[in-house]
Image (cartoon, rainbow, N blue to C red; front, side, top):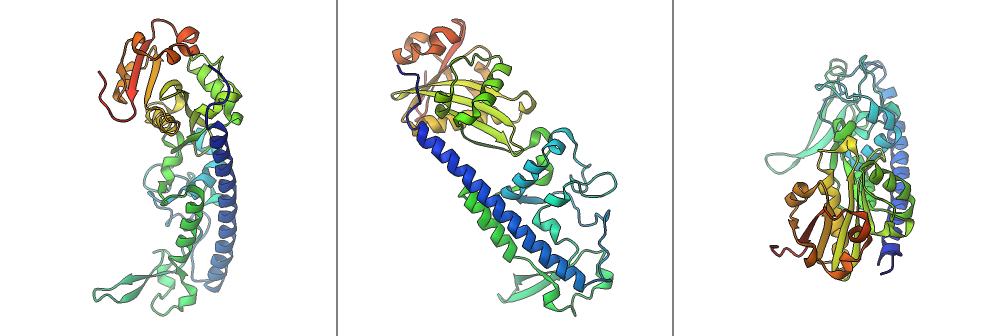
Length: 342
């Protein structure tokens, strides 16, 4: 059996390259939108000079529980990796990114909602009779000096247009309905993880993660990366990996590992699910695996113990079965089409 690139590996690597290009374009579009927002917000603030009390250290608008689109969360995570991995969130009750003095620790990368805080806001809602009614609001700190009812509409920030543009940027990146991420969740081990295919550029990190987990990675090469999937945090840390070796309609699930700092968060199950999705796309209907320590975990994911003799010959002839895993390892299987095992 050839140990070269798996079927569809080049296709999946091309898909990964396309994702990289889309991410770059989306982040550039986001930065252009931020520049436009800052220009317009600055203009509005200057026209309201003397009536706004916003200043450095004022955190009245910096409430807890703020959520942002994934593309904004990605920008924050990418540009503030050290803070998110080594720092700690501000105590609950205020924004997680405030420092002890109430100043923003990510000010250059703050999301859209924070760039218009303090300004008079206006939006449309449907009234009881079905007609549209304009609503207005402003930060309580600025309310005493701003008469919202008499204020010209041009001096109010309109809610809606920018949100729609942000959603379009997010859709161009993910291709699915936009989801939102809590700012507090970006800190530490709770940081959201996205799953997808590996490319040959991920080889060194994957081997390092496998070796740290005590797994044999001697046969993991650039040529086998097309059969691997990964999970990465928004800061770019490799959180989890897993590999699939297809042999006709049977496949070998191998090299499942999770970064020690991210264990207990469901990422092991996440990367196994992603590996099963890859296997299904390759025409695999049943997976087999060997494990010395993870059989209870794999049972929770639907895998059942099976005898080695019941494993197809092409799987038994793989390196994992013949030399890389000990004879004492537990053999397990799962029907990906939903049939019952045992």
